[in-house]
Amino acid sequence: SYNTLWMWIWKYREPVLEVFEAVTGSRNHYAMMRPGGVKRDIKEEDIPYLVKVLDEAERKIDMVTKAVLDDPVLALRLKGVGVLTKEDAIKYCATGPTARASGIAIDVRRDDPYAAYDLVDWNVITQEEGDVFAKAVVRLLECFESIKIIRQCLEKLKKVKGDIAVKIKKMPPGEGKGHHEAPRGETFHYIRSDGSNNPVRVKVRAPTYVNLPTCKATIPGESIADAAIILAAIDPCYCCTERMMRVVDKKSGKVELDGNELIKLSQEKTKRLQKELER
Image (cartoon, rainbow, N blue to C red; front, side, top):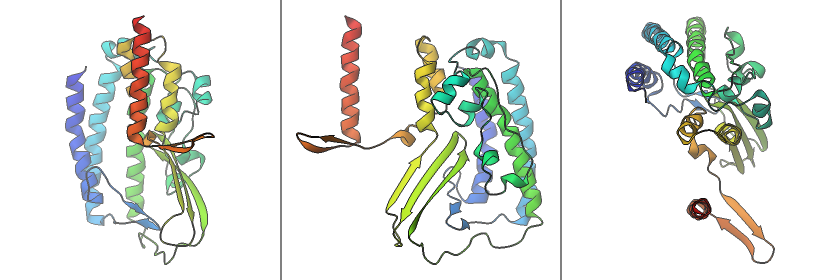
């Protein structure tokens, strides 16, 4: 509970959302990428406005960062809590800020560059402690790197002319895979085409899918109150982890479980665990 700082951040978030809307047409669901490029261009006359927002955002982020790093209460609350060791981060295949907070310097933008990431200067931010505080520090310091990247890209856009997307006449048969650095870490996509307009198979592995299991190493032994912030520290996206299971029983045949049935099974298991704890 740190309502003052939270409200500050909520206020400073608004100009950033306005930039998202100006550039992409949407405040939250940007959907800028499309096969062959992007759907909208950044007008040259908009660049001064974007730079102005960046300048203001950088000042506010600097203030928030200092407020977090210098606050003894936050340090007492977050340091040493939910430690993910470097060994466990590797074991669970952690990615993104969750891994970088444990001393693992991985970032798809640097390790396997795409777009313009190898054309601009920026740093991979790491911490060694692996606790909740380290995860917060990594995310705060990465804001400055993001601003640095955007500034350089805006400067280069002034000199670059051309189409924003390549027209794709037809998708040929075949398969492809790609991985990119999302805010929570590496996101992986696989797609297979038979040459028609509809893909035969699509598989997405979001970063939360590999970061969430790290809680098996970080939560046991901690208090119930700390469990909430340990989980929040990986910034989980639960809809990214939803899956449909197909259970094959040799006696009864195939049985498909949808989301509601999985929830029902989870609730039944929770009730069993509650009864065991009451004994």
